[in-house]
Length: 213
Image (cartoon, rainbow, N blue to C red; front, top):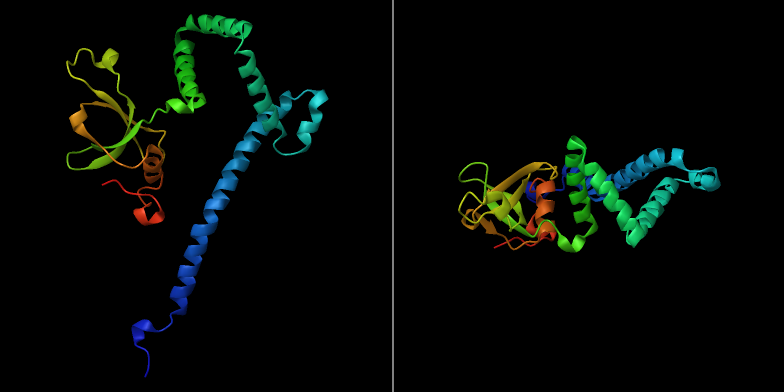
């Protein structure tokens, strides 16, 4: 008995599905390696001109400039931990505080990188759903600060700072101050929620990430 037409082997469909499966498996590795290579090359190109002749061997292999940058930053961090280092840093902070435009840029950058250097104090405390930008539509947001009295003291209501990132580039987004009734916590972690933003919502439960209930 002949097989039904819909169960016959379709060479074109098989080739297409195999190709797409290969793309889904290989491209993440290619993108990851490419991004790492671009980052290492960028650091090398900017650090190598500053490498002294006594450390010229660092220029002979990729990543030498990155190694020197990591060693220098580690040394600076170690020196800043003692009394003399802290005094130098404080003097630099006070000097920059007298420069109107520079102090704003420096202060913001310092707060951001302090947060990066202290992962135990993560900025994204909880992933939430926010009715944004229109009623009836929801966006993933993240609680960044629950102590906002200094910002909303004239509102007369407790508000929470919520950051709503734009997909697929989460570094751009909107800072909202909302009452607790205006957002709903979800059960997935901030890291998992961020993956959904970056992937434009393509990541699903069957991809290995549990959805909130």
